[in-house]
Image 1 (cartoon, one colour):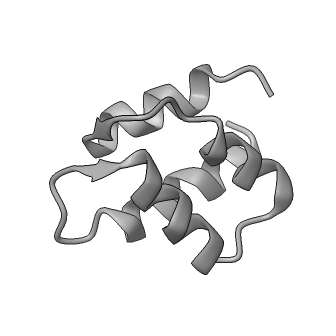
Image 2 (spheres, rainbow, N blue to C red):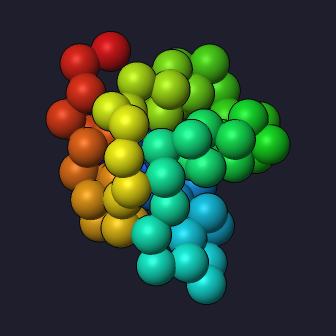
Length: 66
């Protein structure tokens, strides 16, 4: 597991604390607020529009070709 994936997993753990689903826009706003590194932020920005459970978001972020 790369450092970027670990960082994204930690970000998702924080973002989903007490939340069942988040929209891609919510994740983008939280990623900016969390001051994620540029590559991780690019990955979050590339998520297709929609709502995601934490496991769905993690899978989608890993699947993106950045």
